[in-house]
Amino acid sequence: MHIADVCCGMIGFSRSSGISSRLIRWFTRQDWSHAFIVMPERGEDGLPMILESDISSVSITSLGKYQKSGDHVEIATISSLNTEKGLGVAQTKLGRTYGFFQILGFLPVLLGRRFGIPVKNSYTDGIVCSELVCFYLYGATGDEKWFKMKDDTTPGDLYNTLQQWPKAKWFKMEC
Image (cartoon, rainbow, N blue to C red; front, side, top):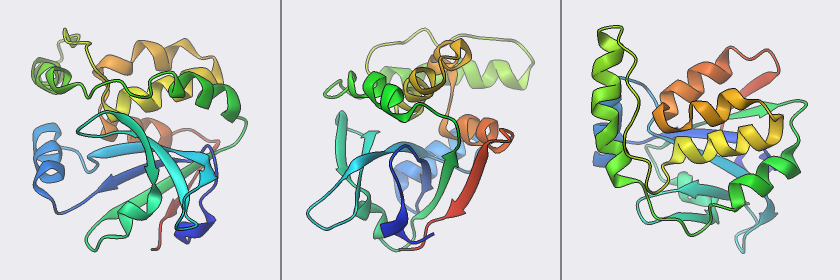
């Protein structure tokens, strides 16, 4: 799928050769370091806008930022989502700060997983990218499971969960 063909409501996953992406993937032992939601608007560059939580806050930016060399992006389109309702829920998080302490809170969660012990992330301030996508999916589906998993979910967890969803179709994004 070409970057210009990406549509509103799709969910994207990315990884790059940058230090933060590599650290997140090493820490989680997963392939993905970031997740975002495609908005209905187009930017000045003509490319779709995305809603994401990055190092500063929850914001809307151009999907064109992933045209850098070395970034790998996959996009999921999921049928039967109430995209408008999902975006409505996710957009209430605009401007919220990034959840730095939530990242630290993933350490006990991930250690617990390795030993089969369920552990909840005790830090819930701020918003991380996977949490934002969970809010979107909660609004778009009405399914409580997305709300319940928002604090303990990594981009890789979301990717793996959506890979098993029969209504999801996957595309590698070509820039």
